[in-house]
Image 1 (cartoon, one colour):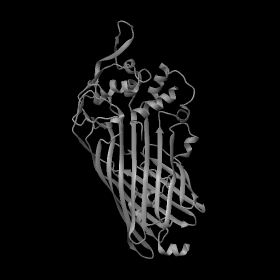
Image 2: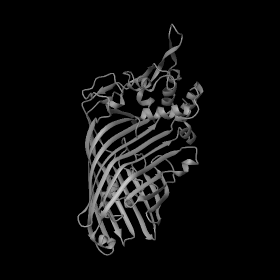
Image 3: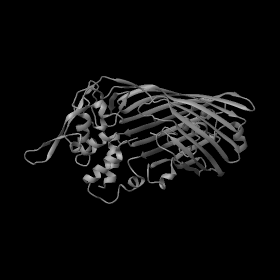
Image 4: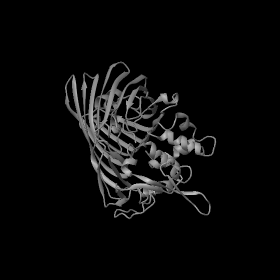
Amino acid sequence: MTHNRFWFLTIILLAGSSIFAQTEMSSFSATGSGLSTTMLTDYQASGINPANLGWNRDGRKFHLGIAEVSGSVFSQPFTRSDLFNFFKTDVDFTSYDKIEAVRKFSNARLILDVSAMSAGFAFQDEKIGGFAFQVRDRNLTNLKMNNLVADILWLGYNSDYFDQKVIDEVTGEVIAGISTDPMPITDLLKGTSFTQLWIREYSLSYGRSVFSSDNVKLYVGAGIKLLSGMGIVEITTKDDKLVAYSSLSPGFKFNYPQWTPSHKEGTSYSPVGHGMAFDLGMTIDLYDQVRIGMAVTDIGSLTWDGNVYEANYSATVNRIETGGIGTESIDKIFDAIAVKDDLFEWNGLTEKKTNLPSIWRVGANYSGIKKLTLGFDFMAPLQKLPGSYEQMVWGIGAHYNPYGRFVLTAGLGGGGNTGFRVPLGFGFEILPGWEAGLATRDIVTLFRDKDPYLSVALGFLRFGFGSYSPEEKMADQ
């Protein structure tokens, strides 16, 4: 296995294998445009701005979507070449490779972000408003480690932190490392953070017009979500204090040495938490040319009651029994560094309640130019929690419809710790009422090696049918 591939797979495994797209979820219709808050409608408005269910984009009353997905990887440790070529030529993972990995991972950020909609359905009527139902998995993983943590993770007992080595009397090989001047765990992890949230949501949204005149139309909407928590991890330092807890589905197969009263048996990715959330949105249409939208999503909480652990923060790191990544398997390294009693000293809990990473959105667009819509979007996390970006995300862009049902989207974006990016996408109708699309959040990554942001949003099974209003039906006839 190449060392590039090993680095990539290592972090995927540490992160928990699957990942969450907050900016426009898996809606390929908006990726690349910066117009999510004001242009997405029908079931794609769920979780973004439910007020948009009150108006219709394509004149169809029913919309059905299956298997719309998006995913992205932002990497400061890996170059674009690393990410594109990690399946190529096999080479040994040498000591030099491990030292180089320490350098690359020190104070570097890795963000893994995926949203997968299993199914979505919407019914919209000009008089009674619009309803939407959706089933979606969302996951965001955010990792950053300081130099010392990277050194210990990759080098294990060969790290300079461990000034004494334990030698096997038979083989003469190093089997452990001991620090005679150990650091408190709060000091060792300062500047290091690892957060992950994976939830499955069942959402029902409603939006409608509440005011209409010749020049102004006002739409409001709300949504409710029933949530299944598949996993949460937070290991962060805040104001010289360490926060560390986890609740992971049995499918992750992390076996803590301590018993927990919330222990859950099994081998599948079954829920270990439950909760409820609400979305609120409002959209204003001015002169049928300017649309302004605002929404707050994920107002709620989750109660984790399966495999719940919280750390005791008084521990010191004084001994380790692993040679680090490239010497042993990931599960053994995790056991040696994060699970063993002498590091975090995990305590089992009956349950733990956490707030959801609520998001504030605002956007506007202008459609007064024939076949062209221009606009902007801003998305800001209201709390720094697992599943949220640490900074505001912004985007400006265009939605261009040169002919028929073919659409091009493009723009500029930034924030969210992922740097500047240039999104691009397109959508088209395969047959009347059958829509498909493909987009990326950063086309420039194909030409830039450093700090790549690989992403894709796609859907090929989106259908629309039925006439939205009697007037449109008569016009069609």
